[in-house]
Image: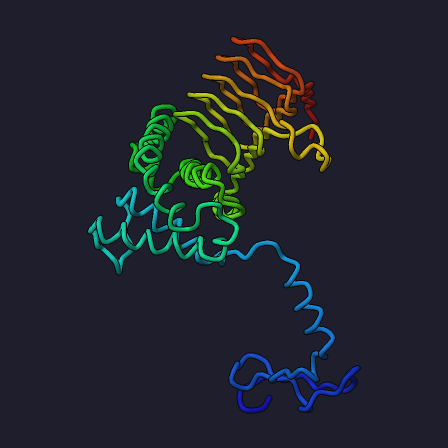
Amino acid sequence: MEGGNVFIEIKKLRRPFPQERAYFCNPTNAMTLTEQDLSIPFFERLAEQNRRYQYRLPSRNDVGKFVEEIMCFLFPITQDCGNSSTDLPEAYQRLQKRLLCLLEPLNVNLETGKIAVAEQFLTQLPTIYENLLLDAQAITDNDPASIGIEEVIAVYPGFYAIAVYRLAHALVDLGVPLLPRMLTEHAHGLTGIDIHPKANIGQSFFIDHGTGVVIGETTDIGNNVKVYQGVTLGALSVSKSLAETKRHPTIENNVVIYANATILGGKTVIGNDSIIGGNAWLTASVPPFSQVYHQSDIKIRQTSL
């Protein structure tokens, strides 16, 4: 122990370091690595790879801040302890600046430029907001555990994931690459709900609990659909050659899909007003007003003490 810092004696190195000891814990005593330490060829390799990237993107941290700011702007029922401002015009201006910041690295990839994209996105906020209110109402109407729409907005992971999806989907429609996926992956990390931003989802969408829900890129979902935890709306094949085809199912209006059901395939259509029971596995279409259940053989044996 030396100066309150733990160190490791370095006896053999492929390339000797200028110091005899590598210090940890205290960043002020951290070693400074020079070009000679890392080797110039490695720097050249990094620079070569960096030149190959087609896109430059905002940081995940900035994406997360944008999501939180826009959620607080739309639904100011939750507040940080240190910030109780409810000035909507001021919040709207901050939101504009944050969005322009996110779009800046991608500006060269946008057909109309970041300012036009930001303006078009913000003009869609009223419609997105009304759809989110319908989603929140559908959740509180259908979940006996919900005490009101405020709880759904502030607490429910399903609503949070749906909200971020709807914001991201609007950016998809405006031709913004990659950023929409960053938004939905931010929500995925917080909720365990994976909704691809290119999926098409109708009004009054209800996700209950939500952990493990997967909704693939080409999924089409109608109005008043209810989905429970562990549901997968996926593809039959993950071949790259199918990237431009419809690979995920179509779920028509008023369908209920219970926990851990799996529905696969771009040609699979679940007809309106159908009920898909828990643990069901479907790769073929079912007509409207169907009830599909998985039957398992459960045997109970009583053992004597």
